[in-house]
Length: 105
Image (cartoon, rainbow, N blue to C red; front, top):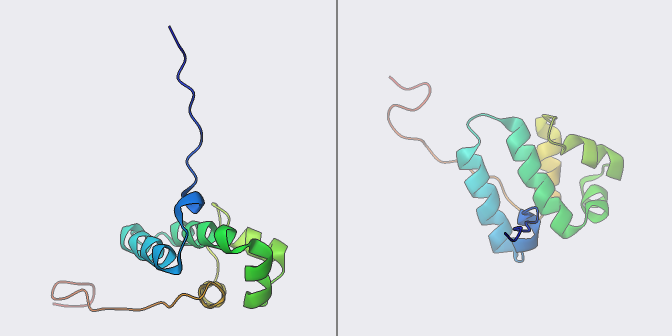
């Protein structure tokens, strides 16, 4: 019987254009279910494509701080999220969830 060889899937290998990066972040925002660490991980995936050192510089953070903020077990502050999103050349947007959303009766 032959063994099946697998390799670890890395989404960063498939994020080639700014549009793909934006679509990935948008999908993660929709699926996050209020999990800030999930969003931080997605931003980390995109930052690896752009280069962590460059993103850290553009965000005004040290590389080590950026790695820590975007690690799997952290929920970075919103100010850090905004800095990283801007450094990645992305925009955060909002839309109404419609009737029945949080805060609506």
